[in-house]
Image 1 (spheres, rainbow, N blue to C red):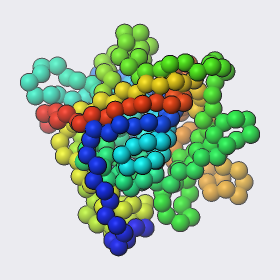
Image 2 (cartoon, helix red, strand yellow; image 1 turned 45 degrees about the vertical axis):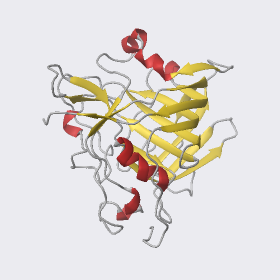
Image 3 (spheres, helix red, strand yellow; image 1 turned 180 degrees about the vertical axis):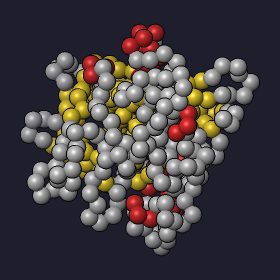
Image 4 (cartoon, rainbow, N blue to C red; image 1 turned 30 degrees about the vertical axis):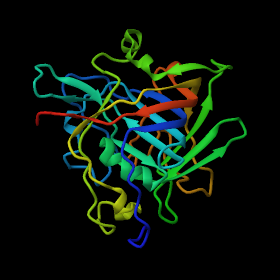
Length: 301
């Protein structure tokens, strides 16, 4: 676990210009419901669970996203990332009569503390730091394992990333397709291509019991205040792709556990896999600008 003798982490306010590659998978384990439904376990880390940043009581199911991103250029250097957007959450914005349903990132890991400590206050994104391992597989796919940054930790997330035969050649892709009427018909009504992120709590110190078992560095787990609207469309060249299970072999950590779903249900929520597989895409290269977050005045519920 990190100690207080380490160099202070740099401050890098937005906007951020980013480049890299991304695997984007559409998920939908629960249909949309006008009334709130239970949010699966593992969607919030112990630091966020039960705080003002916990939106469990506003979860309505519906279409969500799972992403694996490998950033090659950012203001804080190269890093890897996984995130889940489990579905839609309800909001009542002051001054509006209608209720909004928007996406929110509930669990996100990155491979650098520099990203964690800036993503939380800049955009209210509940980042935590983890160790990532990418391994090339004989069939051309890549295996990914993610674990907490403590010695001997068992991976809490495993998967294989593979191209689909649907697209032997790459094609231009922009995530703004999610704004089209066709996309909304195929996915679910109500949503817009934006995130509304609740405030992130800060850790109290390296011995904070909410973070110490996971090997987190308290300095990285900064506070993010207020509800923030976050937009970050990306464009680049891509191919259709698949998300496949990657159970450990005999002798590997986690062998004998049930890995038929993705995530361990504790450090990362379990989900069954991709939905509408033909819409999943591997952005071989992308450019993305994440602007300053816009504060949103949300009524308490």
